[in-house]
Image (cartoon, rainbow, N blue to C red; front, side):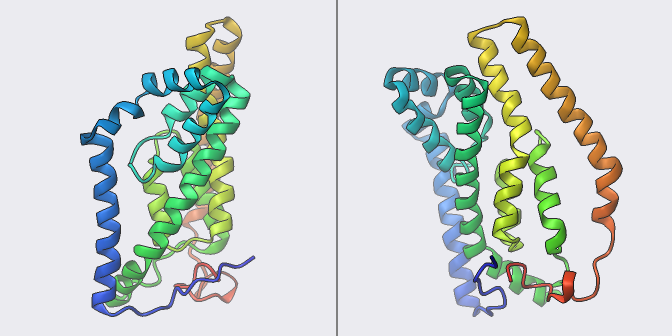
Length: 245
């Protein structure tokens, strides 16, 4: 289903500045809360583990909230997967971590699409580079590869997709599927801390090998696809600025 956005909206300088200022205010507030307030003590692996254990299955809510809010606080997602794997096992922990992180990514994506993309569109028009977009048919692949690579920035990927107005459905599905390999790796690490048996060592090693092999394969076969120039006017005759339509 196509998104019903207004990617071609032309903002006045004042409106553009207000939207950019709103995003910067939210971003700075998130960083300050996560780094310089007492709330940071509740965002550590040790505290989340202890609190989730004390609350029992209600601890799922604590971890889910971390997954949803972590992008706004500019926090990594690996602590969520690690603690979830430690407390609930590799499979259930990974399911919880992937779903919560996908919701958080979607929320962050819509925030940046609303507040940043109009400013970015205006800047591209001013500098004559409005053709610099990622065509719709390649968006899923780009996001999937960024998510699958464990060293990529979770927060930066959300901002990139929102600012460039990538299709929301492609973004969410690619995020959900792309985060599975690295989430399994982090959850395996958490399970190993709680139950260091050779089975989990083998499983963690297998996940790492598969991730490395997938990264190599992506660079060998998929990267050339991304480098191919898109047709004039975008894929399927669409206009470049309208990524959501």
